[in-house]
Image (cartoon, rainbow, N blue to C red; front, side):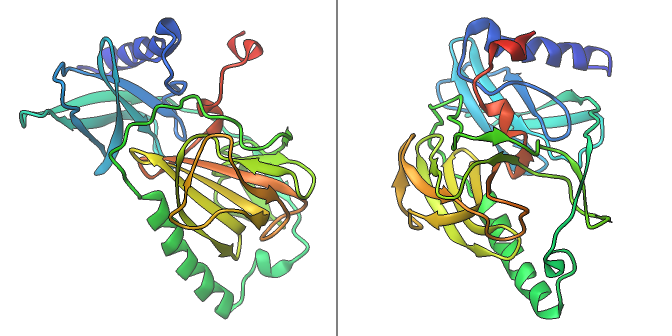
Length: 281
């Protein structure tokens, strides 16, 4: 399949969830987005799909199996490849096109200079916590995700959007890997879907945080909480209160930082929310 056909095929597939009314996330094949790719498999047993050596979510629909692929923000535009293995053991590679996307720049002033330029002891803590956070995002469970789209975890105003190129006190930092929702301290935070709490803790940058695994590599993270109301290993249900909005960690005010990870790629949470009428225009 050449570079011209591949994007056309992916564009067609991106229309499938809307056309059929299926509960899949929105397809947006850009860095930080999602590709939805039909697999040439009609077996009862689900095929195993992989992207960049990470297991990928596979969903069954009347028309067959679909891979729901998270695309890392660091991905360069161009042809990527999804690999999948059928229940019978045959291996197939499917090329798909990642399109370019320009994210805006955001400049933020942080009063606590340690949150921008940590000292040696703080850097050691950050390194330890990074390993814990990455381990949580790489969690995989075979159970099928059945509650899409997700529920927005807190009522509030969306402030900083996903993918922003950030500068803290004039210094460049990693792009924004989630959605910020501003709300008063103590505002309840709810689970967007059923899942299992795989980690909680207080982190240097993220403050009080919760990680929930929802199945097949779909992991959500909630940061800067004032309070954590769940424990590691606890099962939670869609709409269950898990914590409260706070201003812990590196913040300029009370808000929830909500991240969505798919096959260990942080993707735009807005793609997992219901499509509003104005979004379709």
